[in-house]
Image (tube, rainbow, N blue to C red; front, side, top):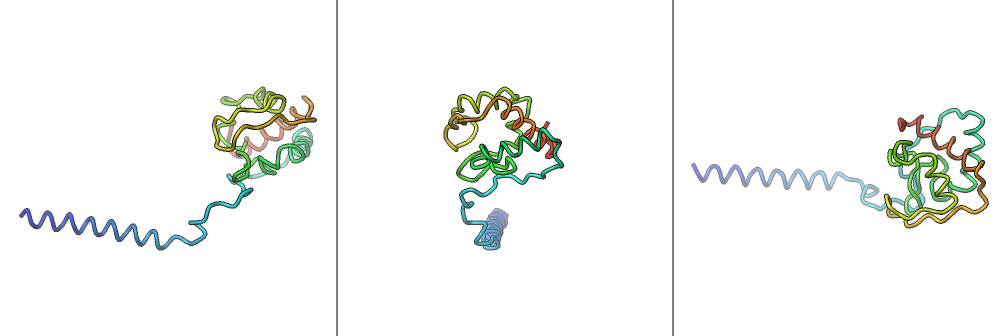
Length: 143
């Protein structure tokens, strides 16, 4: 009896190992490569934009997209996605965006390092950026 139990356990272990090997071998080479620097971190659906969000899109792309991506989808190795539950209004209110632009931000959620202040961005510009980001967030299920 004991011998059969051991045989079954060994067979189960071998099956698990083989299943892992098959799964590993079935992964494509691309899956094993690290993401390219600058690649989007999340998939974002862009909605039709109202005028203030459309203005915010222009200001965002000129001042924020280099790190946060054109659709606030983040950029691998450069900056986090703002269309993410971490930046939902209940966790990072609109005031956080105003402070980030004016004072910069110490790294605390992501491994991208500190964000420097954004020069030459007015309070009105930040208001438009927030409208753009919040519009993207809502369109992607982040409230």
